[in-house]
Image (tube, rainbow, N blue to C red; front, side, top):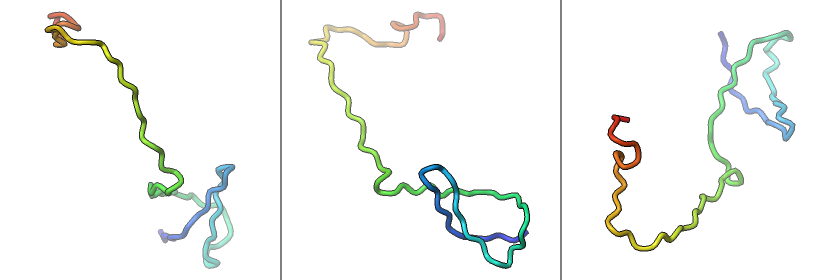
Length: 74
């Protein structure tokens, strides 16, 4: 089975445009698309920032699993 390496262009409508060599005969083919995930600069997102919640001073509170779920082994 021959393998063709080429570039393809995806339009904003999510349509695929690709050029194939002329040696490929006209007809219906099964095609596998392998996508290399390389982020383009305009596709990068800014990191999320979360605000803080001031709860005041802690006075010996514990946050153990048993305090949340009990001793039933969860």
